[in-house]
Image (cartoon, rainbow, N blue to C red; front, top):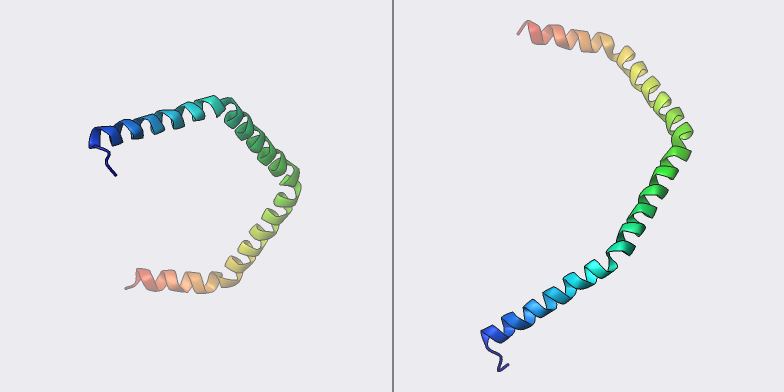
Length: 84
C-alpha cells in the first residue's frame, strides 16, 4: 500500500484509457449487434401485428361496452358534480 496519490491517479488513468480503447475497438461489433437486435424486434412486432390488431379490437369493444353499461351512472355522477 505504499503508492502515493499521483501513482494511484496515474494507474486509474491508465485503466480508464484502456477501458475506453477497448470500447472503441469493439464499437463496430456493438453497433452491428444493436442493429441486429433492433431488426429482430421490428420483425417480431410486424409479424405479430395481425394478432395485436385482433386483441386491440377486442379491448376497444370491451371498453366501449363497459362505458355504455355504466353511462347512466357516469351521467348521474357528472350531474351531481355540477350541482355541488
